[in-house]
Length: 431
Image 1 (cartoon, rainbow, N blue to C red):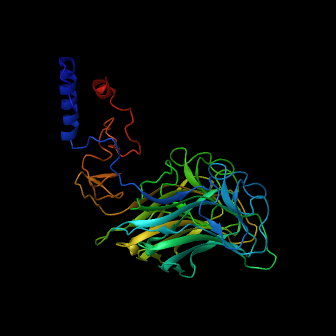
Image 2 (cartoon, rainbow, N blue to C red):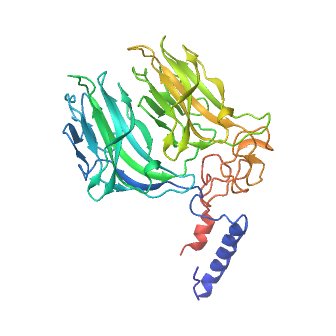
Image 3 (cartoon, one colour):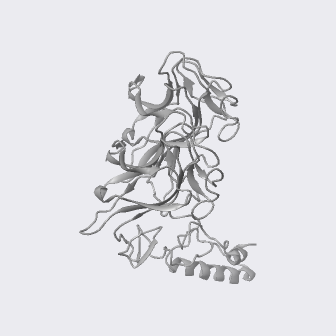
């Protein structure tokens, strides 16, 4: 801070210096931005400027304003990409291909993720596949490799999806969304893509996850799932607060299986007699042959994930209320995992009010790196059972008071600087 030589400003400079110094000494945490690691945006595009380097390898795809029989609007803005924007797709397979993108290297704990929003209505034997091709040498590209082939049937809504690209870190790639034809003369409303992003980040599994901040690292692998305020024919509110995740928040789910998938998390090791448990609240109303399954996948190597393993497949029929559930994760201690809630279709054309999930957390041993008594997991072995949102800073935990204006969620309530900034500092610094 450069102080004016005029005496009238001296007292302002001195007081400002003392106040700021106090907050820097009190934990060294005077800041104008959150200390949490943020995602690095490698690439993003929302199709508002036409093709802009994207292209189709066999026609079918268009870029512009969608309409019936597809969605009545893009996910955001006025434009998206779609397989015939205002009509059914023809009996033709075709890829929507991105510009080439150089993926950066990743550090320990980091992932490269492809994020996108999709709306889909496929004929019975058709599907949407997410694919990738990498450059071997200038102008020499690999064959297309399928990363995900599970987009099928109908989502009926815009839903958020994610695919892990970590295995291709450091390479020049193109990604593609392929309308894949599985039968002769099969046509339908089609596949629509919007708001594509490629990001690098160290995933964070917030606990308990109440979905008050949106998707927050969660994703759906085949549409159907939404995050927000539920309503009829489902519950009239989330379990704790106004939001939750649900299979179409205000309507029956379509005839489509789909998973709600968590961010990745490294589970701690456990000692003798200890357990790792997944806790969650659920509201359910399934059709007769449908069910809700709890599943898990573990990482074999960066970007290489195991097939989904079913931990519990007994959610069926109707609960009619919010009810508490638990699944034992102890067999996966020490591994990097993702958990999933799968709406599992058991019969053709079976629909109902659906499955709603809220307040997801992992209960385990006490992992308290900063020694403040609050752990990374809900634990009976820590001094306090509440979860520490920053286990590297002993001055950030649920027992702290919020310090307005420092850009930090001091009390781990999901809000930064509630109560406002420090107007008296701003006044001192003003002209």
